[in-house]
Length: 459
Image (cartoon, rainbow, N blue to C red; front, side):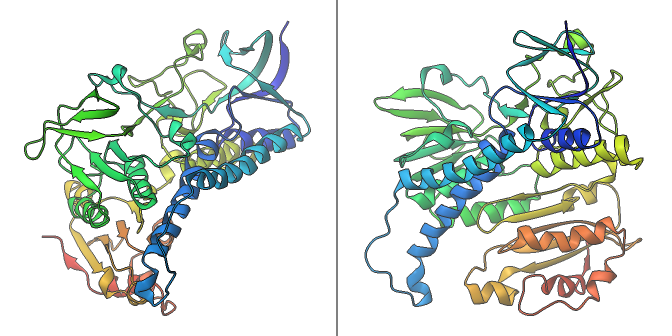
C-alpha cells in the first residue's frame, strides 16, 4: 500500500530543498527523498568545498608574495594539509547539516533517506516504502564522468569528489582535463606546493571560450609554474613503479608525464541511469539527460526535472533558477521560462573569469555586425594598486541594436563585476545606459563605461 503525497521531490541539490519547502508551505503534503548527502554536489563536493580550498590556496599564495608589498613574514611558508581539509570539512558540515535540518523541521514535509526508483509514472519506491503523488520533481544532479582511457583500470585516480578526501600534498598532480574543474584544482594544488601538469586533448584550454581568453588563462597558470600538455590526443595511463605514467603522445615534448597522482576532470554525466525512468516512460537524450520543455516539464504529465540532470545548465545558479521557474509557474501564476535566462558562469581561477551571454566567436558566427571593447587589467587602477594586473576585460555589442551580446572579464574581482553587465542585459537596455553611468573610483567596475566608450568594429 503506497503512502500518498501531493508532491514527491527526489534529490536535495540546489533546486529540490527550496521547492519542497515552498510546496509544503503552500499547504501541500510533500515527500523528499535523499540517498546520499543532503545538499547535493554544490554543498558536498562542488562549489562550497572547492572555493573553501581555493581560499586556503590563495592565503598561501599571498603569504609567499607578501614581501612584494613590503610585508616581511620571515621563514618559509608551509602548508598543514590536514588543517586545510578540516577547515573545508567544517564549512561543508555546516551547510550539509543546515539543509538536512531545514527539511526535517518543515511542516507538511517528510524526509526519506534511501534510493528512489520509479515503479510507474506516479509511484516511487524507497527501500520497502512505496510513495505515490500526482506531481514528482527529479533533482538528482550529476557525477564525474570516467572516460574509457586505456590503462585506467590499472591505476588509482581521483575525481572532483574523491579529491575532497585528500589531506596530504601530492608530489606531482597530473590533471587530465583542461577546463573549469581541472584548472581550478591545478592552480589550487600548485599553490599548496605540488608540482602540477595539465593534460588536455584539445588545442586550447577551456574550449568553449574565445582563443584569447584561453591563451590568457594558460599564461596565468604557466606563470605560477603549472606545466601544460595540449593536443594530447592519445591519452593512456599505466603504473610506473610507485608513480603513474600518463602517455600524451603530443606533437612536441616528452611522450609521457610521470606523476604521483592523477585527477580526472573530463566532464560530468547525469545521475539518471538507476532511477527506473523507463518504468515511468520518462524520455532521456543520448547522454542520459532528462528531456524537458521550457518550463522544465518532462514528456510525462506531472513529472518535472530540475538541476544538472536535465541538461539545461550545469551550475548551482541554473539549478536554483530551475526551482524559481517551477515554483513561479505552479504557485504564482507567473509564466517563467528557461529560455528567458542569459548564460552566465565563472571560472574560479585566480584571477577569475566572469562570463555572460555570447562569446566573441559566437557573436561572429551569428552573422551580427559587432562592436568589441577590450581593456587590459594593466590599465585598471584597482588592479594596479593591488598588484594583480593579469588578464583583460572584453565586451561584445550588437552594432545595430546597441544591445550587449556578451562579455568575458578575466581579472581581479571580475566574477563580481560581470553582474553589472548581466543586469543591463536582463533589462534589455542599450549599452549606452552603463556607458553613461558614473561608477565609483577606484574600482574595477568603473572601467566598464570607459571600455564601452572605446568600442571598435569586429575585424
